Image (cartoon, one colour):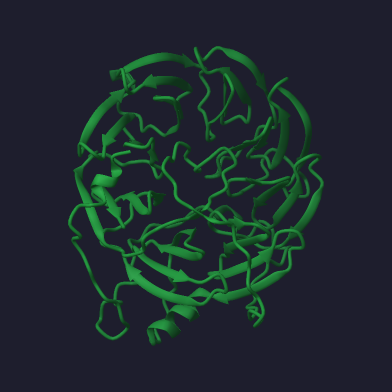
Length: 441
């Protein structure tokens, strides 16, 4: 764990922030790239009125959050097996302590991983890159693909375990790479593009393809243990199949809107339900959801237009609320924090669905900055950090709010975000727009 050495580097930036110096003038500015995640649903569910009102927080509201966690490893694209983010620790100085040289000249995938010493990332050319933070250089670079498919844009999904990277791609290949001994371990071509995150259970690796078939494979050689077909859809949107594991239960949410629970010891379906609000449930019915999240005996699924809380044991619906989160929600104890299409920050009770508060982020930012500017902010992600909410904007500003939804600060990151930030050893790590690794403390 030599990352501590990096954190001792000289602090490069130290700024104070206020609303009068002009430092805020670019908070609303962001590169014009359309967020199409909900484009398919603008007129699809016209009969459902989604939540869009402001609710004032009560004076006695004081949510009990889960303990702050100091994280040393980030080996899953969605942080861990359950896809549930922690209450991360961070020094919150917003100081740049390290910036690397450009790691890749190609478009990189949004999620980066960390094994305790190395950052692992992939790019659109199919490169797998292992960058050592302590040595400040690329330790290993691997490309599986032959010349005849070199020009095809690759979308790689990865997961780490014991110095091995498991990779599934949009061409139908799944393979394993030993990045310490720098060699390919095994590779299989199942001839159907994979379209999900990956999970590992004991000696099995689990992934799904674009036709919503679930693959349970031997992680030591990639051989098929079982393939479970589920409902296919004709139209494809940007939602990918979602997998999560808790204990022996695998939860699988497919692009048709069906949720399956499987016992991974026997590879059998325990129960399944459909969450697609389309009345005809035809194969052309579109469905969108954020990644499903497991918490205790609950399943949290944020779809358009409903948010569901389900019983993990049998799939029964505990809460069904017409509210849409445009980004992955945050879950801590019995509180859910999310951001709606209307840029409302909403806190609600997991067990009852009651809204504890709902604040208009745009209004609160204008009030904090004492400006009449009307352009809405564009949000990249939300995280729970040091018992506070960090809202990362695509303009690379960060809005920090307390758990009651009151703004504490707005800061500009020293470098623009290009990947989702990860929290490690009291620091924030991400790649900037030039594909340089950035470490903030």
